[in-house]
Image (cartoon, rainbow over all chains, first blue to last red):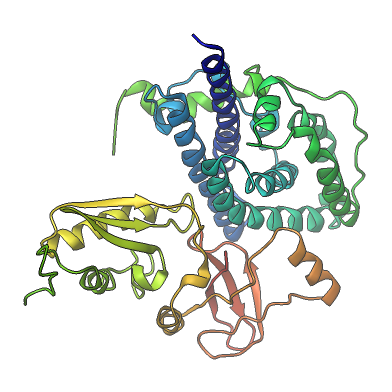
Amino acid sequence: MGAAQQTSTAENAALFEFLLRMGDNALILGHRVSEWCGHAPALEEDIALSNTALDLIGQTQLWLGLAGEVEGRGRSADDLAYLRDGLDFRNVLLVERPNGDFGKTLMRQFLFDAWHYLLLKALKNSSDRRVAEIAEKALKEVSYHLDRSRDLVIRLGDGTAESHRRMQAALDELWPYTGELFMGDAPDASVAADGVAPEPASLKKPWDELVAETLEEATLKTPADGYMQKGGKRGVHTEHLGFILSDLQFLQRAYPGGTW
Amino acid sequence: MMAAQNPSTGHPSTRQVWTWLADVPDPEIPVISLVDLGIIRDVDWEDEVLVVTVTPTYSGCPATTVINLDIERALNERGIAKVRLKRQLSPAWTTDWISEEGRDKLKAYGIAPPIDGTAADGVLMKRIDRLSGRSNLTIACPRCGSADTEKISQFGSTPCKASYRCTDCLEPFDYFKCI
């Protein structure tokens, strides 16, 4: 194998990895949010959560569809979603955190949406046209997600004593899972060098500002950046992912190849 | 009835195809057609195959599959045997592409049509809201025309709609929100 070919193989592997991370974040969070269907505190919220989940699952199809194309082994978005094991999933640990109460679900959504929004905005200028096109589409949807989660974090944080207490507890619990969003590794450096995606660390400052502004309005105290949990991006997950997959993948595992 | 044909190829003209597609209703809001909705971006013949370029509204919209089936069926029924659907993501679909006729049909059906240029940008709109002390958006009630309406939820019965309520006639209604 020639040197040029080796480089392009490595670049391709990094792009595949990046696309899996995009797709898996959307898939796992979409699944988590869909668990609320029929359980939300109000009908409007139930519908809003289901619609958010639907957007994320739709985006998953686009990201994993492209991942399969880039990998070039004939795997479809469905194959990647339903037939990979936990160790092959590349989502950040934040999105597999259990839903908890409504406030915690919304706090997780806000912390993720703020990052997702900033990342997609940057990806609209990706050097890879396919990535830019998906980002352009997804950004429109995610703008509404952020609008809503931001609004509810403020209303619940600056709400009753009980809702304030729950939101602060959710924030304190989830904060150590936000650091992973900004940690870069070799595949990140490779796609950044190619102009496909921004360095993860470059999103930290605008994210901090956006989050701090919202939390202040919500009368919540931003936790200090201490030890940050990590591992999901390279396939080392918490115990929660297995339970998610046993539900998400059940049908294709039990009835391989089943279709509508 | 004979279709308007291109004499050199014998195919129905693309103009004719557009008029046929203008009869295919949106599966979830059947008062407007797929052409009104602005999701059909192009129609073109590639030899014997009619290529229809479609832009999805929302990534996860469950109607997408049904829309594709409806297009194929409608064209098959008009005698076009080979239809290929091409998905085009960019430029991303925007509610600005809903036709004037489509907006009137939505309103008559009880759905407030989108107001151009008001899509959420995630941050800016909320700031404007805060500075002005209220929502900067006036959405008229499609039933009584009153401008005294309030948002119940940013998401409605489908991903493309928000739930509103008229504080004059008290009717709840859907607003086709901008993206």
